[in-house]
Length: 204
Image (cartoon, rainbow, N blue to C red; front, side):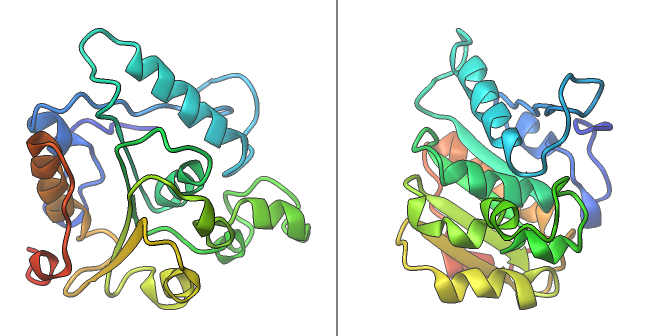
């Protein structure tokens, strides 16, 4: 997993330091088959259950409001949280940064199943489950990140008003993280995420 807590350079800060600095209780769960955990990696499948189990553990803590839990992830984490969001309405909001639309777009990496098995790949592909999402979901990416050829497929296929897509100009797959975290953290502290296209146009 590595160090997810320490702030990194702003052009590629994949830590959760921005949320912690804002006073938000933050959990970064490690999943099956990783970090010496039992089981084996399944790639966007059994890991969905791991996230849901971690959520229930978090919700049971005395200092956590179980009705104010948000879920977020970047890149492969962004893909995973979209799949989690298709299985439950448990979260106050879901933030996915730079996911892919289909597991095939990983070119055989990260899926840990037979990449030629259409059903296995379909189960791991967010674009097929957009209609199942019930919590507010925000999918964001830098304009020069995974948007073209990835997220744009979901934009075209989506008919679910619970999901909003934001293409952020002037940013790539990594530089978009830090400024977005700052905005999202402030809005979580205020009580509700209210992202809008205008406020994201001049993100720095």
